[in-house]
Length: 219
Image 1: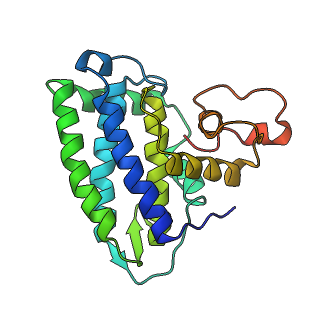
Image 2: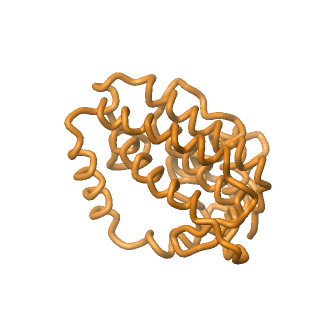
């Protein structure tokens, strides 16, 4: 259960995903941002504010360069994340996100902050050297660190239900991550369908055999 992504592949997918996510958010009016997302219990605006918080954390990881060997890769990070933060009653986390979102006077304020962070993030991602990053108690190879964020962005881009397509490199990386964790999905499925099923955004269809028990692979 491993997936190693080289730095330039991770960098390209991550930069594409930051731009695509920003374009998806811009495709909605403030009123539309208050509508439901694919993430149960969240509005689109909740997803945006979640990404804002994530990008603030990501910036910290980009500057925390270490000489240690990686402890996780682009796939093995996700079970570690689930063990640390998943499980149990999901309601408190959902309600906490709603409180964070309510701190913004208007949706436009969160969107403005998203775009400001995106500029800093692009510079940080573009400048990241091929050195390990320490973040969330783990050590990542640089390409794997950028890859997990490209996957995160692709998933939340899909959560927005936007007409703006998810950048294909990020979506393909998200599918690859799901298949490393859960096993091969039907070849005729689009990457979008594979990621939606693999992240629990849509029900697992019949006929997947043992793979079905390992889905969703990440959330």
